[in-house]
Image (cartoon, rainbow, N blue to C red; front, side, top):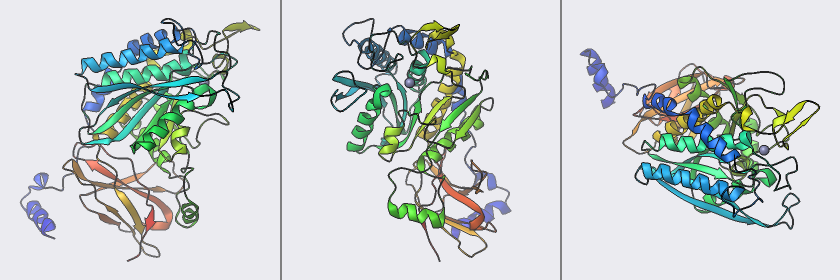
Length: 453
Ligand SMILES: [Zn+2]
């Protein structure tokens, strides 16, 4: 009441610009600098180095300095350590590994360590909250058990790995409130082993994961369908977590949420951030975990209940994936560097970098978001406020039930509840985000409980 009185007084004197009710900025200008800083040349150099190790099959040579996955991971680790040196040790770089055995795994040719390369940029305010960008170190030939034949994996997935390294180079010039993880995973092609091991470690150590942006093939612009497109890309997300309880499943029948799980909200965040800052791009929300019958390294995170999505090119070329290098019936098979478009890979890397920067500069999302307004003319939302001097307030979102993306939003200030007058609860879906004073926003939270008053 007092605040309203002050606000009224300020309005009266024409001083409303100086009141607390001014909304935070719509954009953070630093984001444009980040887009500008992502270099296609750096990405090209890293893809060429990675493809140059002959094969990066998870079970390939680990001793040679010029061939095999051992040389590849040492190169990636050394590169991230160099980036860390350039920012006064701002990255904690290390290997994380798990042992896989031939026994019980029909795609494992021999026992081996699956070794991931990790670089953590610790957040200044919320060090245990992590936003993760992942790519894959490993590659494969036509036969996934074959760990000696050349498998340059330039697009699958040196492109994603190079994107991770480039994001580290760019974002290490900034400080963030939340932690960022630059992650090179291994064992992808034989069973998502690296992701499983890392996700389990994060869970065991009690990490709060804001989201995983898994990049797998971000460099091909010429599809097997003949379409050439350097603007479109896909964001895959599963509808609801596989870890939901029977009770949560039942609740959805009555209150909705079939397409509003945490990974879907993360996907919407990537989509919106891209449209805000990189309007030349054409992000596509794909309403599924991954491509039809195929998988990727975000899945092991989803399996443990973490938000995770896959970012990738819109147009794949199957003659250039998982293929021995050869010419057959006039078709050149193989995942070679010549097919990678470095400018496009840089664009998708920038999509990741700005999403991570926005999330890492944003306060945590509101907790305990609840919705009410049954048989009433207005929808009501309430939530638990986030503490922190960086919080400006909250934003309420809503959309038609058939819309893929949030359509409407209203900044409502530093309050813990809001009534959307005249908006009937039945006809829309709703969510709430936290907005930082710098304009950066958390992921939107879909209400998990209901209330009546
Ligand atoms: Zn693959």
